[in-house]
Image 1 (cartoon, rainbow, N blue to C red):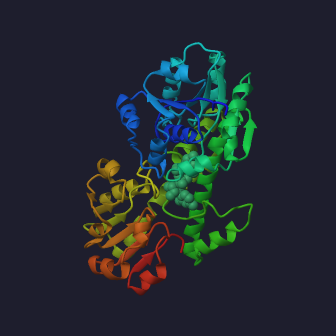
Image 2 (tube, helix red, strand yellow):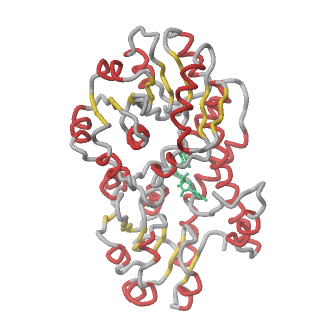
Image 3 (cartoon, helix red, strand yellow):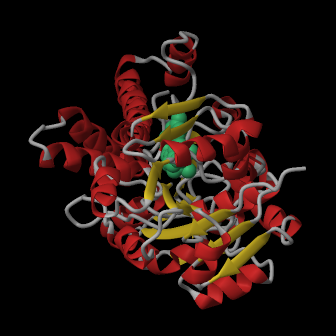
Length: 425
Ligand code: UDX
């Protein structure tokens, strides 16, 4: 059987490690380079420092094909297709910080046999600019669409794979496209700028869909409609689709907030005022705070009130708290004079410093013990399994619950004597 194309990965964070492990699983020899020696050592021992279902097993299962190094030279010797997966965090201006990408490009010596395959999320035009400066290197845009908590499955079962190339890199692009053929998803071959825009526009559109359904939820509350019913009726229209129509306390994470701001900034830099994205961000910021008004409606001023926040992670199945609603709520509640207790199954280690004076609890029941009110912030399955009518009802001082993800059984809670507030219902 023909040798599988060797793969190089630069930057072994969440995207880089998922990419490296999944390509190794597909049978490719993979060499992954990171600048942090301690990370390279722990990964080489099979220790995976990220909470991502299925990923540690995949890394260990493919240890014979997966090599970690700090040495760029070793990577350049081992592979010609170099997947760039470094972070591009937001600058204060909202622009993407490309310093790590630039550092990678600078480290790649003259070569006619290597190509940068860009997986990091970069502003439209980045690929063209890099290729103009480094005509010796091939350049292919190959954005990722992985969701935290289901990244391995998203990689192995892609809705589509996007491969952008031009200016003499089509040969490299053919090889990149061939890597994904065994996965069977549609492969979108396009130019580099369009590939970069597909990534940003896709995330911005999903974020817009969430802000839209959140506004529908807020209006539904005024008009007596049930947003879950509304979403069900809307979602059956295939032009709309039922995904990402769950109203709640706003979107967070390392991607949507960053990519929406980056696209808005990018448009602004090119002289176009992207009004819609302004509103998407504004609606989302307000939505994160919506639970406060609902608590005050039933508890009055929140001074000295004990408020439990169930869930800190920006969504279930991850320990990621970046741009999480919980951080905004904890700060807002404390500035209203409330005492905040928080619990999360996996994300507390990352959050402790960011939660101000909030009391970190080791179980949901401990957080609810003596609470005047609770907010369900992240829809972890275990919160649905709590004995609300029994133990929780006994422990809470006042049975007031704001279900920030419409996750709990409203009828059962009301029958158990809870004051229940959902989002848009
Ligand atoms: C996202 C994109 O989905 C993925 O394609 C891209 O590659 C990276 O960014 P991720 O950030 O992991 O993935 O989270 P996602 O599952 O998309 O959720 C984002 C946020 O939206 C979360 O805070 C989630 O709670 C919220 N959300 C999602 C809603 O409020 N309602 C929904 O219907 C769906």
